Structure formats: structure tokens, C-alpha cells
Length: 65
Image 1 (cartoon, one colour):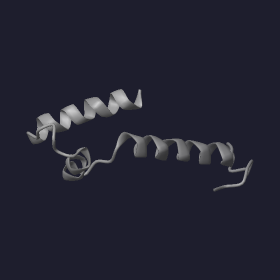
Image 2 (tube, one colour):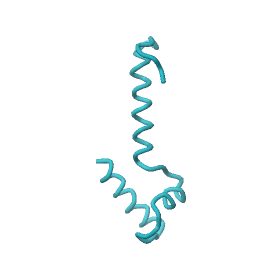
Image 3 (cartoon, helix red, strand yellow):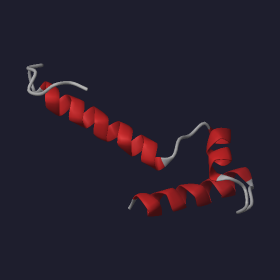
Image 4 (cartoon, helix red, strand yellow):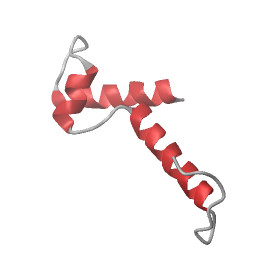
């Protein structure tokens, strides 16, 4: 899923920026001020894990990283 999502984002970026396929994806993302899908998903998973570790009433269930 991650690969497919990144592929569609890349296609959209190329359309918006008028870029060719040889242009680096990181360059296009930097131009738009975006990050790769992997980084965004990892950030979301990390936040979810932190909330899970905190518990419902801020009770520490596990060691926070």
C-alpha cells in the first residue's frame, strides 16, 4: 500500500510541477514542502504507540521512548 500511495503522490507532483520522470522525487517533495509517505506513516505509528503507552487516563502502562 505504501508503494502504491507514493506512486500516486509522485504522479500528482509531476503534474503539478510540470516535472519529467528523471527529476528526483526528493527534489519534487522539497519543492512542495512535503515528506515521503514512509516518514509520515512512521510518525503516525509512533504517536499511536505513545498514546497507547500512556493509557486512557495518562496512566503509564509502559516505558515511554
